[in-house]
Amino acid sequence: MAIGRSLKGRRPPVKATVRRSQLINTYGVGSILPVESESFIVAGLDNWNPRPADEIDEPRLCGLLGVSRLYSPPGSEGGSMVPIARFPEWVYCPNCSRLDRFWRLADKVEDRYINKCRHCVTARLVPSRFVACCTNCHIQDFPYRYWVHRGKADISDSEHALRIEADATDSTLAGITIRCSCGQFRTLEGALGSNSLRMRCGGASPWLDGDRVDCTEQLVGLQRGASNVWFADVRSALTVDRTQTDIERVLERISPELAEFNETDVVVMLGLRARQYHVDEQELISAYRDHSAVPPSYEDAARQLRADEYEALGRSHPEMDGTETFVCEPTVVNVLGPIHDRIELVSRVTRLREVRALRGFARVSTVNDAVATSPGSLTRKKSTWLPAVEVLGEGIFIRLSDTALARWERQKLAQDRADALTQAIQAAAPERVGLVPPVSSRFLLLHSLSHALLNELALDTGYPASSIRERIYADKGQSGILLYTATADAAGSLGGLCSYGTVENVIRIFQSATERAEWCSADPVCLESMSTGAGAANLAACHSCLLVPEVSCEHQNKLLDRACLVGQEADPSAGFLSS
Image (cartoon, rainbow, N blue to C red; front, side, top):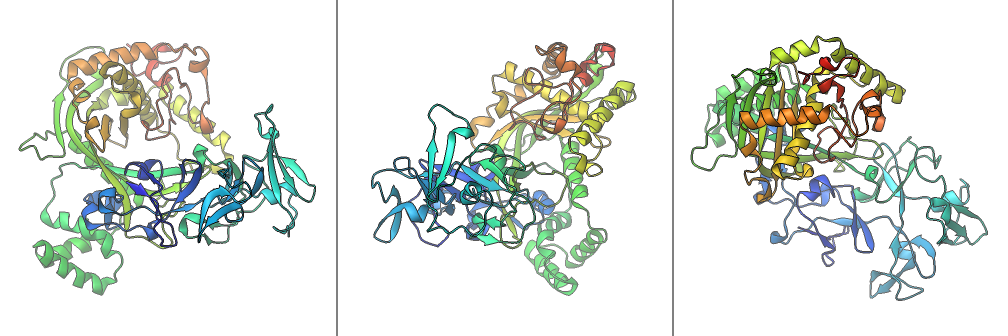
């Protein structure tokens, strides 16, 4: 799809083309998009023009996110483009070393600025390597004048021209010097990271037409291409066959738009929708009142969405006419053995559909999955729609024996490891004590097992680990792992993964995963570790054993512990997979 329309409404030539799925996961609203020697920020949804033909039907996800519609990002076939704006504004010339805003340095052809230095004519301007962000998701140009003059206020642009110099013998930030025409100079050593700038955020949102708000957070200096400049907040749902009445289906579809009306108008709207969808009006009104009596919280809605998926993955959904988006063939494990008694059911999911929607984003630190809103706004005002993509694929669902899992949870190791991880996380971020829920031993086990199995599947099936994703079902009464591959084209639905979804293959993969988990090349350090990874959110887990590509893990490679699988050196029989 094409990207290029400016925020001013003009239509310059297309600047770049990216895949639709990248506008959800990589280059979504508020992210920085590099284009050759230039840099831009993707504009908010206020400037997008979704087409009715691009609507994606997934009412369960709409209900969770509180919107009435999901739309695929516009494709190039419709002639529409996603708008962008130049960011950062500060650029420098590699020839004359001048450092200033783009419109001050750029040459002009007729009434349009071009990306060439007006002083050197031929030299292309290079966007600033550094930006400044805050945890409220604002972003602005790096404050070079503030930095050089060490916080002095009222620095005139016209009287203080800056230049940037790089020491070819020093590749660190200390080798980059910013010089002012007044004689002041300072290297960029110490300019990045927390407590670096000691400057309050200006509340800038350049992806929303430059809106500014009051912000009390401190700015954090970051490299423009750093991963923590933009974290996507993506929510997804599997399309599953659920037994619903016509009334329930209609109500689920129209619930988000009803939230905008008062009680009187809701009754009128329900009458209109009843005639539109050919259902009984009184039954629809009654169902709405029952549904609205106790509105579910975001946590409850998310939990129900996963519960629907978990139930569907354990039932048979045969292929009837080839048009199904969900086909599942479960097999109950009824043989005995050292591994068999830990597995209750294996399902070959030969066809699945997943819808992924961009709810918002975060900067500096990752998104809190448990909250109903995202810190980074996609629009200036509440939107009734969100960008999304649908992907098709296949997978394997494994349901563990609840008896075996409950027996393991009663062991001392299970609770000790969960408590140790909870304490490590709280010690790493004392300001979040009480805000982060305790780590569940059931989730810790299922997540660690998921990574071990994912790595084995990648070796056996030939799919790269980065193309296999996980979905953990660890709520009360659940004990499931879905490992699947899904893409927006045909690459994820070739049958290579679900063909391994037989009981015999899964048992063999469990055995291989057990053998591999018993020893890590980083042992004994790895197995004895009590806090590792970002935010001390792992115990015994490293790149040689349990960590997988970030795109594969729905929890950012956090909350992992190999000891849950194979025990510790002092008690190797306490692991879930220990014989």
